[in-house]
Image (cartoon, rainbow, N blue to C red; front, side, top):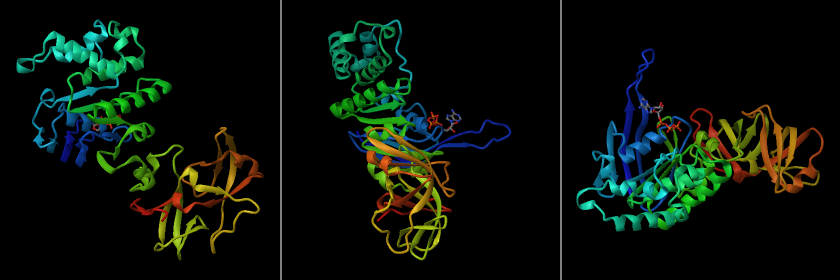
Length: 374
Ligand code: ATP
């Protein structure tokens, strides 16, 4: 089922007497969620993710705009008439019911020509349970399950009505780190198997990037970018998106362009074809190359970026060089090198050559991206 948001806006009236400004929780959203895809709504706290999800499922009505499921305008339909399955952060299982009874519960409420026989309900519950791999736990109570298992029961309960759209609001937040990883892979597997259009809300960029076909990056009720995770990472539309995606995050410096040379502070670090102006320079952690004696010479007019060395962290797989520079917006610069790099660092300074493909340049005023390393 394709889901389409058409000029959707949700305004909450300001209740604060001192600051009675209306809150634009969702401001003129226009996007399509393709049929059968998993889409991640991603952004910091308060950006409007849950409001968007609640608008799509019908728990909230938009102030203006329309929501379409395929060719049907569902804007005025209540949640129960939209055919959506919902899973929240707190699994909200009935503690006195068994897993089987919890999963069957939504089917027992069906009335009229939707009413099902006991046999069909049981078969549907078994099928949903098998899909999320809890079929061996059907006679347990929720208190006898781990957090991850409880969340699977909640997903089975959402799937049992064969929803057209599955909505997941921070479904992994209550799980520990290992279970989060395992459960997010499970969600991807279940979605791939069922091919149900799934909308997944999270503030964790790594989570969204790892399982989504598409991500919608949001801030303050506005959509900043929509795209495939790798494309958004590689080609962020602006500084906010660039900083929001990636662990460790992108390193941002104050910079400028003068006569075809990109500068960080006073150091010309890259040849670029851009007009002169004040910029921010973003360098991904993998965009630094350590310069030592015998390194290849730099292009004409370009100098190494010299930074104050803070620490060398060896993880086994790779090396993080932590350093600082007066024009970096953050107190430390994190660069990731191969595991051999540690042996090439000596003294209190490190000198880097920047890899053009990993450098992004943003306008200092608008913060829009103006250079993509090509
Ligand atoms: P979080 O990750 O913290 O859950 P979110 O991105 O899901 O945040 P929303 O819950 O959608 O954000 O809230 C978006 C904005 O709308 C926030 O500024 C919030 O304070 C405001 N808001 C949400 N619900 C209401 C409401 N019922 N009345 C007034 N303002 C609201």
